[in-house]
Length: 79
Image (cartoon, rainbow, N blue to C red; front, side):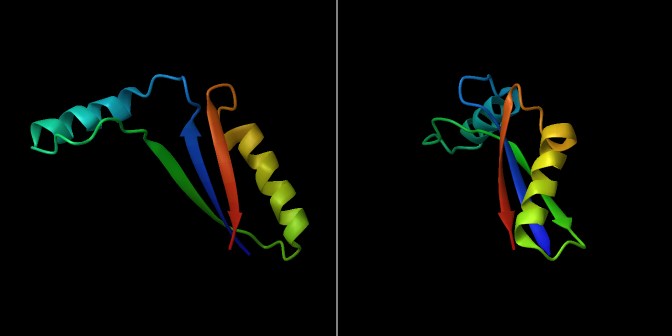
């Protein structure tokens, strides 16, 4: 089973990289971009075949390693 985890900074947390991208886009002539939030996507290839067990395992991975839950939120998709 495959899982995709999308990790983003929580709203209200300053996204320095996103702001740098927004500024760079402006200098390249893309003036209509008012904000950019940058995150990361992690794809996992799991041996687990049970959907509930896989989701629980990925949630545990996120809470322990893949996301800093103080400042980041995450979304899990099982594919």
